[in-house]
Length: 211
Image 1 (cartoon, one colour):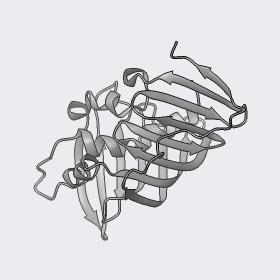
Image 2 (spheres, one colour; image 1 turned 135 degrees about the horizontal axis):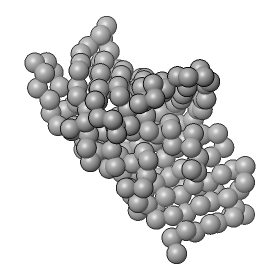
Image 3 (cartoon, one colour; image 1 turned 60 degrees about the horizontal axis):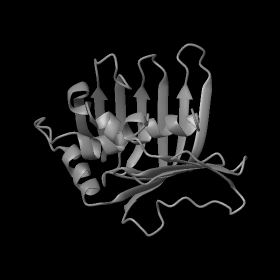
Image 4 (cartoon, one colour; image 1 turned 90 degrees about the horizontal axis):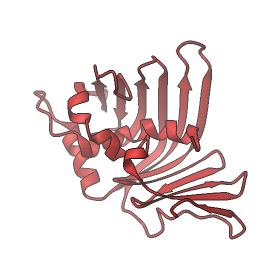
């Protein structure tokens, strides 16, 4: 799989979008932070943040990590990490590998995208249960869990600032691997021109897989 580390990172990062766009308002006898976050994304805001991503293998305890910057909004996203960049604008997927000076362009197919919001949203209402959403020392803590054997994660812990900006997301997959993404400098911002356009040198090899 192309840029698997980036794929693994986005699997977790886009849980934020699942919450913002996929889950309905939930009556838990307390304020629904899901509804508030949903409104932010529905109004077109983009989440921008630096991130540090780490996966710990439950069997070997081997650790794989990566870091970079993300921009996420609805069906569009952009990731820059480890000399590689990925941009999806809802219709086209573009991947630039700086080490190989190569761009791969393909038609965007949400159902084939392991970390596409739409792919996960298809069943998120029935597979995930909100166990907790509460304020803890001024920040917001949300716990999701799933008993579905085909769910991407069994459990997801989400830590948000008081203004709903993600600070950390920790997930446990069906093999009990622990995937943690921490954020710094996160903010919601208005989309800017060129935000979801991939930049690469004119000399780059172009591989167009749309034909």
